[in-house]
Figure 1 (cartoon, one colour):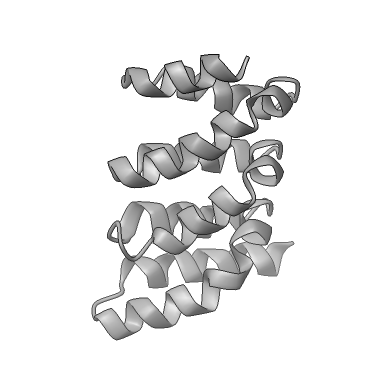
Figure 2 (tube, helix red, strand yellow):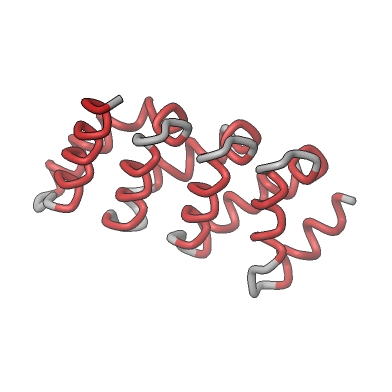
Length: 139
């Protein structure tokens, strides 16, 4: 646990210091296949959150693709529900819609889950009304 915590801190620091497109691609390619497992990890979720904070919309698209493809698994997890909310905060409009579509189509499952419920509430509090219409239609 102790070593992993320091490992994830080092990776977070590295993400902050990326300078060139090739450096960014190297990190993105290294993390791409581990997004969901990192999100569900006590320390690893901070690496993904750092990507959301530091990377451009296009560079962090790999996170949105993984989260959208694994919406229920992420949203119903203790750390995943928080990361999904940060994903929404850090998203372009298109990325936001990508996630909201998945949340909407799984809303009945999510509202019955202790963590998924928070994600649904968070989406309902978003300012754009088309989201709410889509969510409400699922009921």
